[in-house]
Length: 414
Image (cartoon, rainbow, N blue to C red; front, side, top):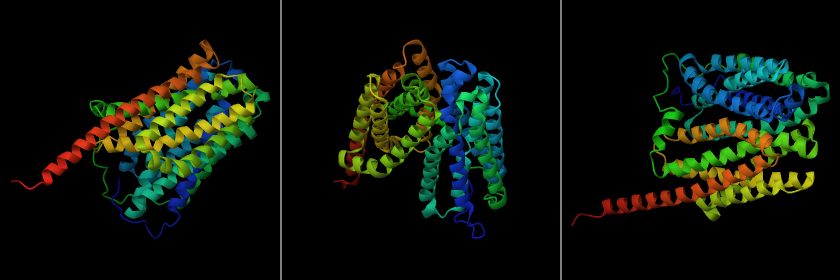
């Protein structure tokens, strides 16, 4: 990344515009989510094919993150940012006019690939920010992502007309494409290139797959990364099939699913802002992770009971809170155990889970029962809690040994 140490005074709107771009991008992603289950009705798609839309988007996004961040180090942030945003708009248009489920799957993978430009946004923020404001501004990027996911499902649910068939899905998808065009125009007009001539690519760091391979040889990191893998796996399995389940269980359409998803976005933001830090300070990181995953698993299992739609929705919002309370603590434990360059392994673990487990949820939904994704998702979280316990004990022992060694080195030689 560039070595610029301070934001350029002639570009005061750069960061706000970037935050707006991230916000509108996640609105576009959120718009699509409540529509996905109804591709089964429109195109006669199987649950596996519907949940594959989640997997292919995640897969495309993963490879996009590998591509666009490094390319923007060489070509510049602005052209990569504008190009990926415009390409995303084409992906939404392609999805709006997809003639069958296979075309829809291809469009979703393509959109995911071009949506993997968050590393470019983060690179620009680092380029134009003073060192003492980088962390805060990167946190704002995460907030913009969360806000976009709150608003997007509501828009998708309100604009969709599933009774019209595939034509009824075009208004929200074309709205998502329009938001991308607005974002690209804003970037073209307001944002200036942040890389100076002569700025080269970032120093080489291992990519996420290389970092994951290295980290798996570490006895402390291995169970902690397993916690990430199985917790994200169970979580992704639930949400990839949730629309299918709600439609089959309660007869919900895009509007109801969109409103609930918006509620989960609010619950996610609120739980991490209000409770995660407090809980970690009171209980400690390891207890927070174990309790968070264990309670969430039990709440997930309750969804197999014959609950009313209102009670079920309340439990969903509750387990969104309990799950997200523990995620920052898990990341903190991984960061304490990881060496420089290994933090990408945690991202790789979550990416692998998001790619593969949605389709497993679809298979379980269609071949075992509509309750099966909740059952197996809860099992994944229980396994994640167990691995979190093992990893936290190993980490505590490593830190204890390191402290003892430091004390021994500080003692004067007799």
